[in-house]
Amino acid sequence: MDVDPRQYENLAINDSDVHNVVLSYLIHNCYKESVESFIACTGMKQPTDYLEDIEKRKRIFHFALEGNALKAIELTEQLASDILEKNKDLRFDLLSLHFVELVCSRKCTEALEFAQTKLSPFGKEDKYMEKLEDFMALLAYKEPEKSPMFHLLSLEYRQQVADGLNRAILAHSNLPSYTAMERLIQQTTVVRQCLTQEAGKDGPPPFSLKDFLKS
Image (tube, rainbow, N blue to C red):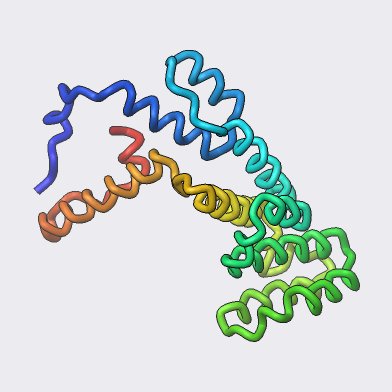
């Protein structure tokens, strides 16, 4: 069975809940000025030490997003040295960003040396082998941007790594690693899928983000 959204048209929504969802999104994504304006407009209580936290995370996030992974690693270790020690996957991703930047700068010899000293130790574990092979294959192309592995040079890949680093820092600070909006979408997706399964093959189509935004 499907759920008629009209059943909820008159459902009251607490303004403070909406404000918390918005504030969670702004803090998570390091929008410091927007956070300050939003708090001033709504009269919400200012989160403890959020300004200092946002500034540090923002710098780290942008260094990773720009491909300056070594600086992102340096600042992350200054903030909390055990974050990357405990998250080997994330450390590999950050080091791989630096390798990619060297390749894009046509510093192939330096890239190869960096791979041998910093990336090759990861090759002892099978789960990193395929990724290592893809990264090393970039060296075989005069124009790596046109190689089958071009996605590793993309802004989307840097965004993915930067987001992962941001989440790790938030979790280390005992803050939610996902925004309230993301959790709402995840929960709504699960509920929708459960309803679809109960309804059988003739039930409504799977929930999508587009459905959520339209509702």
